[in-house]
Length: 97
Image (cartoon, rainbow, N blue to C red):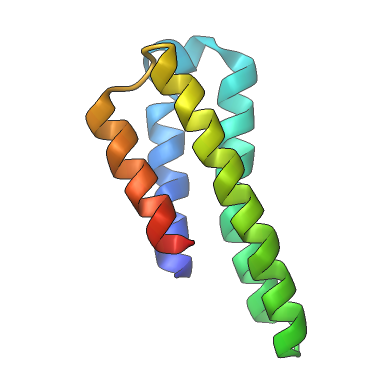
């Protein structure tokens, strides 16, 4: 799970260095932060000592997944990313979720 989240962060950072996302500083920042938050919350949850704490951080990570998906829709609707790239990242987010 953490490795897949790490791959999502890398993909989001790479795609945001190109095209419209490179120029749209607000959206670029938002999508990078939400993607990074997915991985960070999984890691923080793994570092906790109880299953209850771990579950709480996984739940927070699910919120970050939803936020990242929302930003992806905006990027797609503005033609910043292709449908193929959108579908691939969206699928990866579903898998992590």
